Image 1 (cartoon, rainbow, N blue to C red):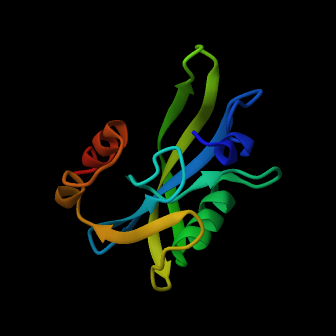
Image 2: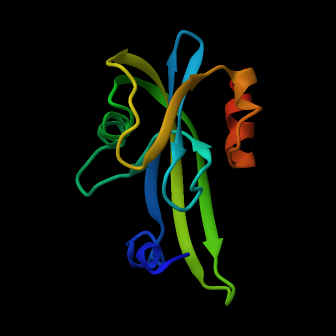
Image 3: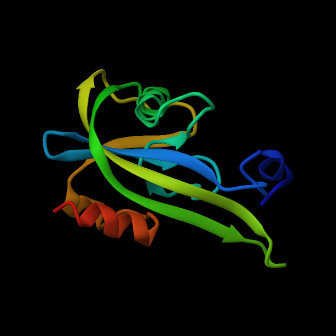
Length: 145
């Protein structure tokens, strides 16, 4: 991790943070983004990010997808909850997120990689098995089949 990453408020938090990650469907495909920042830089993931103070889970999910993917979505329901905890060499927690996964449907717009997305695309569940992504996320997405 470089100094710029360490200055990011996500690293070495005082308490767990909460993020939303909608699973956005369109025509039997799911939108995925390739991350341009750590953690998971260069890996495929769901769009999403931190919930801002005063923002609802659904508002955060819609905002994050619009910021990262340039599309609008309709949220259907809560799908699952997970977590990501990373410790450094000294055993200190350097990263801790509670992850809220939502099912959502595409509403409008053309996907375009924005903000921290290096690339973007629509993928079928079988295609997801071929992508470089966190194994727990891959299992979660394959459970949709």
